[in-house]
Amino acid sequence: MSGGILVIWGCLYGLQANDPVRVRCLGVNGAAPVRGELLYRGKAKSVYATDQPDLVIIHFRDDATAFDGRKRAEIPGKGAINNRISALLFAELARSGIATHFIRQLGPDTTLARAVRIIPLEVVVRNKVAGSLARRLGLPEGQPLARPVLEHYYKRDDLGDPLVNRDHIRALDIAPDEVVDRMEALARAANAVLVQRLARAGLELVDMKLEFGWAGEALLVADEISPDTTRVWDAATGARLDKDRFRRDLGPVLEGYQEILRRLEASEPAGGQAPGANDGGAEADRDQGDGLT
Ligand SMILES: Nc1ncnc2c1ncn2[C@@H]1O[C@H](COP(=O)(O)OP(=O)(O)OP(=O)(O)O)[C@@H](O)[C@H]1O
Ligand SMILES: [Mg+2]
Image (cartoon, rainbow, N blue to C red; front, side, top):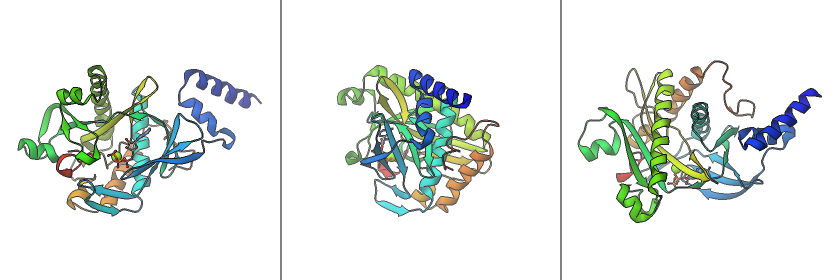
């Protein structure tokens, strides 16, 4: 009986605090959010409404695309691996006090997230030169950057997600200056956290693409953080383990993604419960179409 009281208290507390505890409570007695209509089918994920207007279910599919969709494949198992990696990395951000849309992993290839209004501005953070930056500036891939380099890309598939600067962002009225400032600060903070997290797994975060969205007044890191949206190299050998394997035929794609997940799982903080462990769970290419980049 006292257990029941605790659960009820926990739910009330969560409702008051408007935090993920609330949604955990919805899973009690099987009352998990019910998947509703398909809201958006992207190149790699599908987003579904739920019976609660502030929540969405994200389905990570096995589809892989690069070069603005000109290269396509299905990689069986990719969706589940990306879902799991993204869950682990969003949980790490949450532990560091960075607000994200992630609530919990629902199943092997599905995640429950807060519904957000996506800001059509992608933020790329780079720690080493790679991809389009190497081409654009004539620098060798792998050259360290003295401090992380941020870039903005206008999220417009029909334009190929072009690189934009602050004046372009103002001209297009994508977001006010102070919001872009906050996105940059969040991107730098998330990068610092994830560089450390991946280093603990013997991995190097070379670069990543982040998306942001509004949930009411809250500015949240959204979308996914996975080998599809980051460059992750083996810290010891420099081997590419991410989507560059797919873009450039650098080796078996799924194996690279699996290796990232294996190392992340092996280096999860002791005592820290993996997100969604009880729930049955468990592009960066931009200009010239190479993704992050
Ligand atoms: N919490 C969220 N609420 C609403 N939409 C979201 C949320 N998280 C991510 N999205 C959006 O859902 C879509 C996910 O699909 P996917 O990543 O496959 O798209 P995509 O083909 O890469 O398209 P895009 O180039 O627009 O990202 C993206 O447009 C992303 O911005
Ligand atoms: Mg995407």
